[in-house]
Length: 410
Image 1 (cartoon, rainbow, N blue to C red):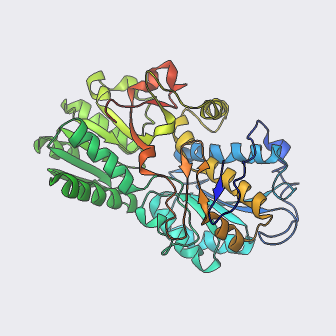
Image 2: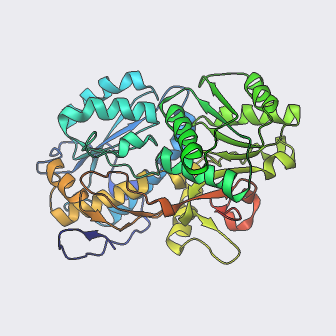
Image 3: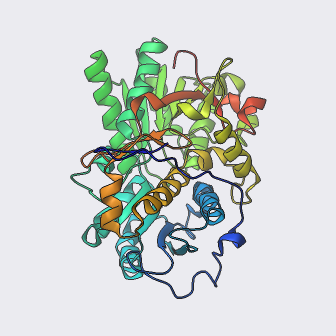
């Protein structure tokens, strides 16, 4: 159920279903002549994804949910009674490419934009697109991206770094009672944002401070010096935050080599294929922030809707074993929300879509409910952010390592 504020009548979203890209008609025929975002004909969607570059393979699963949403939208009749037109642009996973990509997007005149992914890329993108006033949702965790005053056309359908930091710091300090907490982050907008947020949370909530803070370059090939510094500081609880899966693997390798096994709260829980490489005592202490709706306990399990989506994610060829990235991505929920808003407003005009989005209250996403106001464009509630365990990826309840067991006390 999605509710619009200001006295509008509640309306039920349309039901998701199975479909195919062929049924939606997203090939050359569907991408032929059509109307712009605010005009007549096919509703146009801008799409920003790294098709090339070092992040292309790692980020490809992140867009699986969006492709499944397109199938569902096509099965339901498209948008405004026609198949949508998707204009895909390769940003090479680079912040520097965003101005040029934005220029091409603006020429396309889409109704709204999907992507890019990565806080540094997103900040560059939303800044470049600001003059065009295009509705956009991208995967960036920086708290700034949910500020409706600063970025009035960007809507954040992921938990932000402050929410992540609160969950991680509470788990390490309060739930597990650890006092020598360290931080290791990548040198990026995301890394800086969450480093500062964890530090502020420890200070404000617990009158504490990290005993060590390590910052590495995103292309670092050896994490041993950083891990040794953490070990020398006698870190017993570690916030490990990076959007680069290879960086986490390198950090774990350095820890395994030295026998340094702190309790970890990470940004990601994707490292299933690497499990056999590392000692079990290290893996048992590995946790990550996630969505409450994607976790289970002995007495709870995710909804049937979530489980059905996970089955489709596991079957999709682009998932490539990274189902956790696919299910935590915001893009399935974003596209389904936009389909609902286009249907309810009867328009693909970005200004009208923005007005409707600013009044969304309780849209039932698969990961969590989503709500916005004109000033608050961070749509996920604090209560929907929790901690999951890495090793639950081997449990049958995880559905192939996509869902996670909620950590005790989280």
